[in-house]
Length: 293
Image (tube, rainbow, N blue to C red; front, side, top):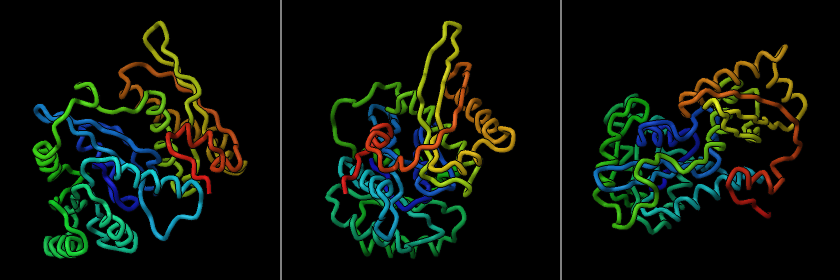
C-alpha cells in the first residue's frame, strides 16, 4: 500500500507506527522523505508492504529536486495495489490536498482515506472533513487515526490483511524494510541534521555513506559526508569549534547503535557541493529518477 499526502501530513510517522519500529525518518522539515521507503508487516499469513513516499506539494514544483520527489511519490502510487491518502485533520483540505485529490481521481487502484492527528480535532470536524473528501473522490474506506499515539492504526492493518491480493511473499518474513544498512545509516544522520538545525539549513542538504565496514570486534565503522550548497552552510553544520557537528554525530551514533544492535564508530565530514541537485549521480545515490527537463 502506498501512502501519499502533502508534506508533514504524518506519512513517515504512520509508516513507523504501522511497522512497529523506525524505518522512515521524521522531522518538521518538509520533504524529509526523498525516496520510496518500504516498511514490511506480517499479519497472520499476510505480508503487507507499506510504501512511504515524499510529500506532494502545490503549486507544481519548479526546482529539479522538488519535481523528482513529487514524481517519485506518484510513481509509488501507480505501482501499489492500494493507495492511501493521508490528510492532516488539523489542516483539512487545503490547496495541496485539493491538488492531490484531483489527481487521485485518475488512480485506478482501490483508494483509502486516512485522517491523521485526530487526537487534536473535534469529532464533528472529522466527520465533515471525511464527507467533503469522499464527495470529491470515492474511497473504499475511511480511517481516523493518530500516528503519534497509535490510536486506530491497527484497524488499517486488519483491513489490509483481508483485502490484499494472494501471491508469494515479496520479502523474507523477518524483514521489516528493504532499505540497505548504509542507506539507513545516512537517513538517520540526515534526520539528526534536520532536527538539530531546523530552518537554518535548506532541505536540499544531503548525507551519503561513503564507508560501511564491519570490524572483527563486532562493531561497525561508518564514514559519512554531509553535503551542503554553500560555504556558509558548511560553517552552520560545523558550529563553533565543531560543537554542532559533534551533537549531530552523537545523536546519530546512539540511534544507529540501537538500530543495528552493535557498537558504531561514526565519522562525519562536511563538504560543499554546489548545484548538487543538478547532478544525476546524486539522484542515483538517493534511489530516485533524475528529471531531464
